[in-house]
Image (cartoon, rainbow, N blue to C red; front, side, top):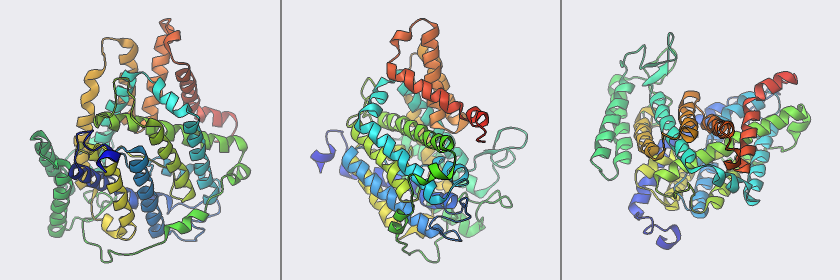
Length: 473
């Protein structure tokens, strides 16, 4: 095991890998609950829900979500041998539900997701995806890592309700600018405790923070009966109410969902150009979200060399590509590498053994799905904020006196959290980098692949006008 995963070579231990796997699972276990709430409750163009049902089957989709996440995360650990976990991609699942399934059946929508995964896998096998990965300048990769750090911290603050949408301003702190709810109190205590443990270099700090904050959330809920967040209860716990479910066990066979996809039906159902735009949007988002996550988390784990390359890059990207295809085939949406993997890395994970631990826990969650719903956002969010800090520290590697790289780096960093999208940040950073190099007469210094990727991003950002031009909106 030590030789296969290079545990000692990466200065880790089996206990650290197990702790890291646990930390990653607890910070992203919410997807087992959240993904079904998004895709299982949406009707397709024929008024059907996933599985050809006339009513949502949330439990079945939850089981499918956990199953695919578990299998793909284990594959990432065994084949990629890195501490990266995979699950249904947020943002992509909403796009599939509200943009694609609204104009075609669920089988056809998931077929397009499957097709997108196959295309990316072919790009990996031909070496194109890996070549693009290596064509990005090292300092721009650093900026991607820093931007993800800010993004993941913002996710933590928003998930915990510490940062919210406001009436007079785009965002505000707490409820109406005031930290008045018990869940926010739980988050703040958890954050301060986790920060203190990390500052003292305590082993297991992030995992202890998650578990300890969850216990505090249970105590608060038992005493104050806060309930779950809703428009009528803005002071409730986000997503999950910290109580022991009345029926903690149950099993729904996720394999039944693997007969529910049609790769080519969507091209018949809608205009060929529109179906192509759907696949292109999925591909660009999946492709560069993963690239950013791999760079950011890999750098935090100390796996990235000076030019920004990772060991076994091809295997990592191949497993991620297969995840997109399997997610579509399993009707749970594209599976992608999760930035929450950084929580496990922050706990000390450095090898694929941590991913195996996380993946096994996802498979167990198939049978104990209700138990996964006990951890509220407020308990996991402090870990994301702390990990955001850890990822931000690499900002010192950017030469801020060189405007050719610092301006694109700055734009990539800020656009990610400000638009809530890793791909948007990468795209803006690429476009700015190519533009500045070109206007300064240094176009020959730009890698040919970077020219092509930048052109694709220009097309990606212009999809809205293109739809209007061709009457597709």
